[in-house]
Length: 80
Image: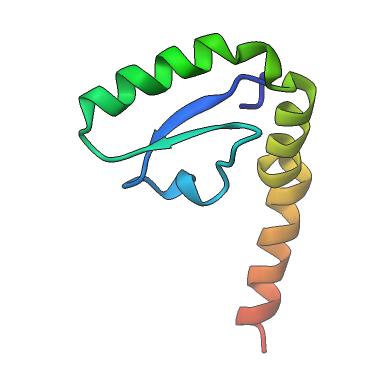
């Protein structure tokens, strides 16, 4: 996602909470048919994904700045 690519994730992984229609697809765990259909769907609608937006959102959520802000929040919570 940092490179702007949409993703397909299982509903059993932690990353599914920030995946939405604009950056990827969520499928049922171990559902091979759904994976195949999702891959076909993504190929057919690939041009509808905004690679720049996907990349920016990913970096805003997981980049260095976000990491440091979350780390500082953690230390402040534990320091009280």
